[in-house]
Image (cartoon, rainbow, N blue to C red; front, side, top):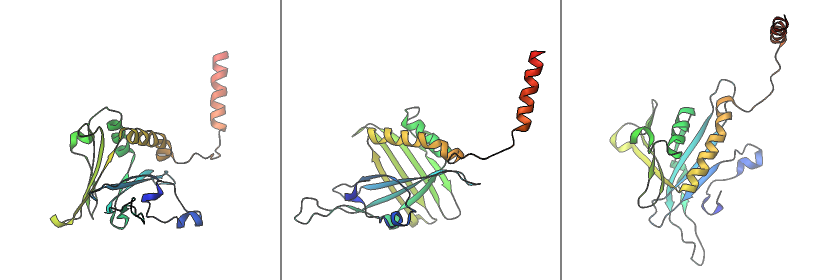
Length: 200
């Protein structure tokens, strides 16, 4: 995480509750940049695993060359948070791998809840720069209730993110591996019977 653009606290780190995140901070001189934070939630008990993606639009521009340098800040208080499940992530991997140019032929993925409708768009772009545009649009009801955020991922960032997501799918599907003792007597009896039949 680049501390220049981090306006979150590490209070959780002191209590042992801090969850590592993969973050991208892309401010620009126009103040229209965006930050993206991704947090892995392994499956557990009866809960499916996911990656929580949080988008925060740029709040201030900052000036690193001033006598007292200031850095761009992002509006985490009004961020858009999206839960990406197995299906969402595997479809995003198809775009990153070049199997398709965009999610659902540009229509994106829809998450619909009683409170809001969220559309997630991921597309490969070539102009003006090669990379991937990841966008999120949320509407809570009326035409004035819409919010959106967009971050551009360079090819190396997209490649790294794809690798991280792919390597996370195991714990997203099955949780953190643990040994659960179980009775294998029936299995051993069945295998022994099969061996006896083969010997006969």
